Image (cartoon, rainbow, N blue to C red; front, side, top):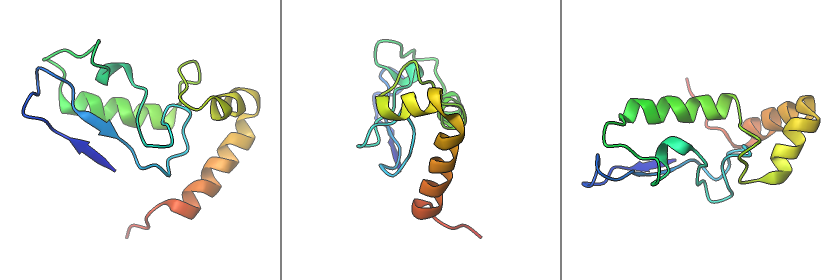
Length: 100
């Protein structure tokens, strides 16, 4: 949904949020992301925006249920991946923007 680039970059991480309609165990209901590369404690001035975007895309394609912000989704992902994928597809069909 938005990424705010602060004048403090590269010395501090930016605020990186995803749409709150995202169905991922690593994204909370407010769109905040559990991603080590953007954690303030792990942030390095040498981190490039491209690396952050690649890490976000990888996290969406392959969730990390061992670091969940939404434990119910992590549990479903681990215990019934087929159900998780079906729910994610249904959710995407309902909330995603159509592109031409």
